[in-house]
Image (cartoon, rainbow, N blue to C red; front, side, top):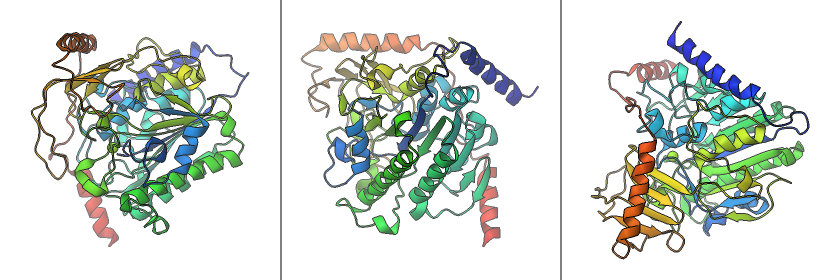
Length: 464
Ligand code: MG
């Protein structure tokens, strides 16, 4: 048996455990559709409901007004690939060895034995589709169709990487992508998916490439915001959110659809005016300050999530896996070790998240900080110089921050309260140890594997 076949059987077995131990009364209520809209590198300060005054986002704000706004929602990592792996599996990226982002030269991807949200929903008869950025490996076995999705349209990695292509399912469909139309194109594909699957429960993962640099807006959005091209791009994303909501409304699906909007990590501040803003938060992408990890997150589900809830407690992208499992009656087998927590009760406003601690890993999976309740401690940092890809950040001492009064992490209380700092570091180490044996980092990129790029470049030449 090939190892791919063995993995598939293992994954099927784990999923079927969930199928047979279903706890909800099926047939009584139609399970909810789930639409998860993901922006790339969108900052905490880039949408109206989180304080932006120079970018208008009425549709995203509508989700917040009609549902819940999470003010302290963490991504699993301050960079793209590990963040997405955490979202789809409910597990810390370090458990999968994902210590960096994947490249077109990568021959690795998110390990296929990981169980994804798409796989558990598919086991409950959901139609599962992804439109947009995947970024968890582009070799055959790592592509979305082999990770629980029924359909795929989008760019397999980041939009700034060599030879950007549009893939359809497992094949390249277009070798040249005009990114001016990328948000429109993804929106069309998303609406088509909803139309096609309106009679079945469905899960749509709409992972936009925007506003990750290089940024593009279509002509009708250029010049519409008060924050240059970046603002225009975000306003087009907001338009896209509006199109999805309108489609769900037209099909009379809003009452049975959980719609979530979020971002994969903080703004790419090294890109200056082409990157976003973390608003009141410190730093951005690539750093474990709040600006890198805290992402603007809103969710609505008409008739189920009460209107206008603001949740200030901590929650995370890894919570969606157990939350969706709970909502669709999938019992998670013990063999899946999760880091996320079920937050259905937070969505429905009937309870609190059961745990308020969080381990912060940087983009290379170095443990850097820890949160417990409103306290955050951060290890001392030696600083880094500015590069075209990474903002320069000054060195700092050990930090102790009270996030309830200081979300911008400006007042270091470490010297005032060394005892609390010590206790928190102790808790942090304890939780880290509990992660147990961790796999070695995956080899992310090697110059030895240029086959993919060579193939694409050859194809590009032939097209000319
Ligand atoms: Mg990103």
